[in-house]
Image (cartoon, rainbow, N blue to C red; front, side, top):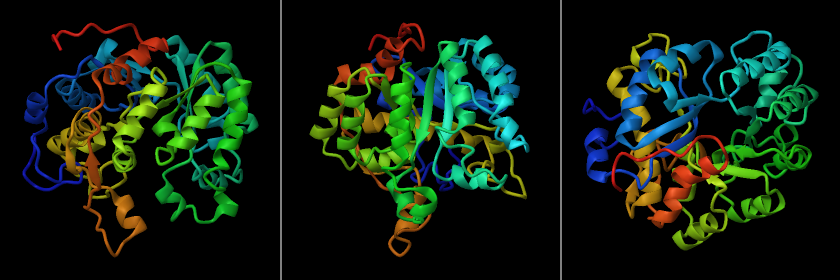
Amino acid sequence: MTTGTPHPANLHGIDYIESARSFGPPPVPIIDVHTHIGGGQASKIYKIAAEAWGVRHCCSMTQLEQVEAVSEVLGDRIQFIAIPSFSDPDRSAAHGSDFLDRIRSFHELGSRIVKFWCAPRGVDYGDEVGNPDLLRLDSPIRRKAMDLGASLGMMFMVHIADPDTWFSTKYRDADRYGSKAWQYESFERLLDTYPNPWIAAHFGGWPENLDFLDGLLTRHPNLHLDTSATKWMVRELSRHDTGEFTGFLAKWSGRILFGSDIVTSDAHLEIDPELNEMTAKASTTEEAFDLYASRYWALRHLFESNYDGPSPIADPDLAMVDPEAYGPLDSPTLHGHGLPVELQRMIYHDAAVGLGLVEPIQSTIDA
């Protein structure tokens, strides 16, 4: 499904369908615990990409208003994560009383996870409405949502920190955004306050530092990590020594879950003369497919193969840190770690089942 024209999600003109066939099925059906599936038409394209790469179930941060349309396409292959409305102009209500209502509605739909986004740039989001602490993880408005979620027996997913590359550029003003280590202080307090399971997205927000994550997991037995944010994971997890990385995953087997952070939108399917963040990523059906499939290509090669070469996905963080050495379409090296099959099984499927997110999925292929 490629156009032959270089695209940030397919720099090397890969036929992602044919590549999936030649790569073969995963050892178990993959459960993707971190997606953002939106748009009825985009969901159909995502389904093709997911099926091609062996992904049989996903947990999605889908806006409540789009749940019905997405469910019509994906059925029991998807479950939903409770999220607020980031498009509501009344941000205080959106993350306060309205979010509480949405948590209840999502729970009635079968949701078992509440998501809390607290990236450092949330200060800017809150500042625009005169409350820079609006999205702080331990703010009163967030604690009310946590209390409700905990009372409903839900687990929490959290976005903590951001890449090291951002702290050396976008977040240089530590007085405003805090240091990277500071982001975890309130998080650790809340892990002790709420003993229900937590999933720290994006490899806990610090894939660059396995020693820190080791300590975090040691101190908090209710903490799990997911592998979402594919570009970030490819760049940073590829840099680790394979033995060290495999040892980390083996030590914390059952607490590392597969996630991609794929975002789908019907805005990806047409050219918009006023490009926004969504339409800039894709503007045709073919580009949308490559955008979604590329994430599964990259993550499966990272975990299963011995591939050692350029990632097919452009990574703007390279140019952000060193604009003289890199351009916007440069990509990092993807170093496949060729994990043992038992670790692949755990990350792809068994950890999510063990956490109670989904029932075991029977493979239709003899792997």
